[in-house]
Image (cartoon, rainbow, N blue to C red; front, side, top):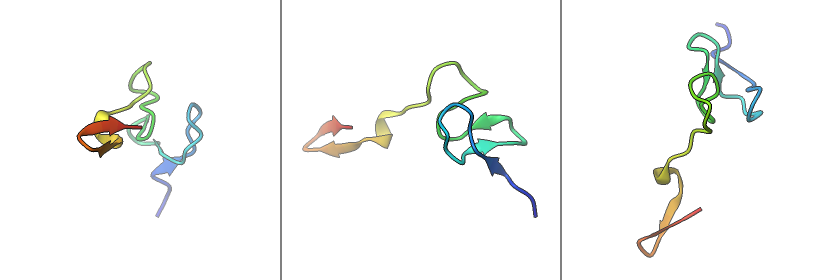
Length: 50
């Protein structure tokens, strides 16, 4: 049993997939832009709040 994810160089989170070569949290290795989605923020009275 090895390590699937190591610490990411860009975001510092333990989400960099060694086999796939990209970070699951910030998208490092896959895109130059930081990975973010609106569904990751909670909706408060039908308005998205960070």
